[in-house]
Image 1 (tube, rainbow, N blue to C red):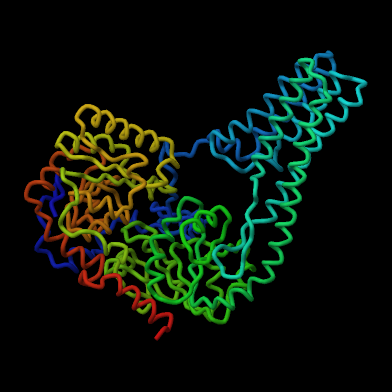
Image 2 (image 1 turned 120 degrees about the vertical axis):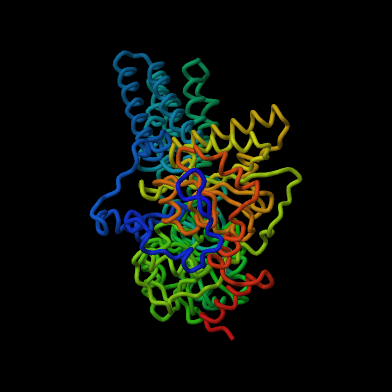
Length: 623
């Protein structure tokens, strides 16, 4: 493999595969640290992340801090979600009310109360924050209650005004009750035969918005001289709606408790043969959806068990397979029915251990990608009865990093998700390059993201006449610096599209396409250390990997897949040489074909995905 722009310019096309891809002594000690959260989106947190946080220097004596500038900053959305904005709004309303009462200036309370009501709701909507709008900690009920009392302040001595204030205040004070009932009524299951739970007809946040609007309108109307009698009907309607929605929430809570008691019986009737256990944050549904089509091919009933409500909603929308929410450790007892034989996992989330305690079941780790990242050779994999891997590379990766693993743990099953990738050709009418950087990871030594030089890569591709498909990792916006770089690249592509008419693909258009579609449309790939690279190997088309750690030579020795790739240095100084090699002669073509079988299994294209299905049926014990 030519590592263009560095000292190692000799091709490795003739090097034997075992020598080429398994070089344990060549790996620098840095890559042997305790693994951390996978920057392909593995979350939960990972067991390795918990361990590394507790004893960060356990393997090499050196803790790895975040890189300067990569620290997560406090964003407005975080303040809204924490309730601090709501609490500050409540203090503002109290101060305004006291000033108005002392100086006999109701308008002060109206202004401060209106601001205290409107700002938290507006910020929650702007940042798509659905928690913290009502209920503890922080609530707009306090400022709206004080706002309602302004009516009495303005119309002191009026029984009608007092009644109006009471209606508005009661509606506001009922909302925390509604919030608490909602918290006590998380989803239970979706698509499970015999279980039908009606969703909430109205979201509590819409009730907050409606009641807040009514409060502000009524108080302003009273201040402007509108008689309070007509406004009583408006306030009464708001209170009645709140009472009805709260009552409906209570009924749904009671129905859910009955359904909870019936869950073991319904599951027993459904008779799932295996389960897919998943614990991760919302937005990482791809970890599950990439496996669902192939789990269905096993041909027996199964269920998806999700461990947090935010993730439940996303998965339930994307599949018709029964999805069950189990939040607590003890909740799992009810779902282990006699028909269940095995459990599959797609990440190393810490709460996987809650299910592994069931020793009568077979526990199979599938993972959600094939890559040379540190979490891919974690000792945590010993927890499972079987580790299904794509090829021999995944097995050698453990020994190459000093992690002893029993050979009987592994089953080489290929990577079924690549079965629809076209080999050696593109579906595009114009030369097309795919740039697919990963995200920044959780710690400095798991940051493989090339976005800091992404604009240089994209500009070089544009100069060579490529249509660029820019598809960053879904977690890119976890770091503002990387988000800014992604926006910068999108602006470059948009400007070139306007100037030249080149139909670049980026933003929502790119994210709406599957990775397989992006692979098939591309003539070449530029990416980072991630499973994207291993999957693209199946196409046998040229790809480049960015060496964001160390030199190009060190990178090639550290990450085996790089030996079948072209390697860009972290400053982007060799971009033109790399692109020349990729598009003129392609000297590592043979190395890619060798790497394909090493990383993705030595299976032919016919029935490639069936290898996984057969292995799964065998492990589960299905005839």
